[in-house]
Every structure is written in structure tokens, then in C-alpha cells.
Length: 267
Image (cartoon, rainbow, N blue to C red):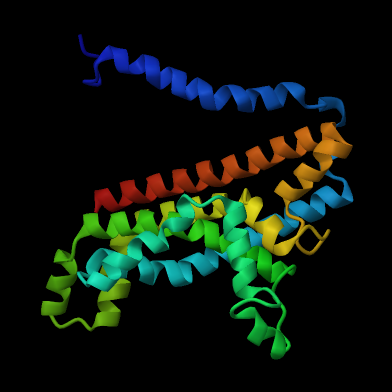
């Protein structure tokens, strides 16, 4: 027996179990919130400061991911070089690394006595345990999400339209802006959303590399962790706030992408 969608009916059972596995824990948070005092809990000075810092750093890291991730994704998708193929697993390695390991790696690279940080420190530039360290930690863990999404989009799009444009005399820059970029826009949006959401929820690498200084490096996930011991009600309320913000970003930009796809299909 098959469903009207053409899927075997038995597939709906594990699909429903999977959906419940995600939804039930989120619903459990909502049941534990101190609703009469929620505004007071999420609008404390430390909570607002942590939220604003998270939004700023997540935005900055997403922009940085776009600047360096788009070229990386296109090189991975279009190059047949053995060196590029060998480098691909290393570029995607942060996907499977524990975040705390990423934080330690960044510390030994950009810390005061790090491989690069030693020379930066001599030049008067200090990165570790600053807001810049938060952005770098978030970029390190979220960059592969953008790269892998955009690489897939680039492979799917192929080079046919670009070849035709080049044959008609378009310069490489014009081909990029008028052909390549519009074709990759859905993948670019998906990758940017994933990168932003991953940056917004980053904890381990941030704590290890940037520490937890209020107003400087204490993002919302770190604030939730600290409040969990001292004020569990505040931790639950802030957890729900983080879920709502992340859901708004993903659903809002996802809907925008869907509209963009429909508009593109209609052309």
C-alpha cells in the first residue's frame, strides 16, 4: 500500500517518531518556564547583553563565512586538483570535531603563545579572550556548514550557463555577478542560515578560546550555562528565548528562500 504522495505508509511511523524526538524536548522547555515572570527573567541586564552580543558576533561570523566560504566552496566544486581533493576533508573536519577541541586548536594558533598569536602579540594585537575570539570561534565551527551547502548547489548547477555566457563574450566578473551568483543564491541562503544558526548556538569553542567575560565574550549560550547553577528559572527562560530566535531566523529566511525559488522557477 502506498500513500497519495507515493511513499510507503510505514515510512510515516519512523518519521513521526523522529519528529517527536525533536519536538518533545522543546515542548518540555516550554512547560518548565516561569511564565508569570518570563519578561523579568529574559530582560535582565546580563541576559540582554548576552543576547545582543550573540546576535552581533553571529552576524559577523556569518559575513566572514560568506567572504571566505564562497570561494572555498566554488574551488571545491569546480577544481579537479589532487591538492584540492586532499584538502576537502580537512576543511570539513570541524563538522565532526568536538567544539572544545576546536577552541583548543584556535587557542594554540591565535593565543598569546600560539603559532600565529605569538607574532600578533608582538605587534600589539591580542585576540584570545576578546570579542574577536568569539567571532573566530563561531566562524571555525560554522564555516563547513556554508561550504558544504554551497558546494552542493554549485555541483548541481553545473557550468553550462557560465560557459554559454563566456562564449557570448561576457567577462569573468560579469559572468559571476549575472549568471553564477543568481544560480547559487538558494544554496548561498541555505548555507548562510545554517552558519548563522550554528554560530548563534556555539558554546564549547567560544568558552575555551574566548572565555566568559560579561559584555565581551559571554554569549547567550554561556549565559544560560552560568544561570543553570545560580538561577534555573532564568536558564530555562533564556533557553526558550534562544530557541525562538533561532527558529525565527531559520523559518523567516527559509520562507524567503522558498519565495525566491518560486520566483526563479516562474521566469
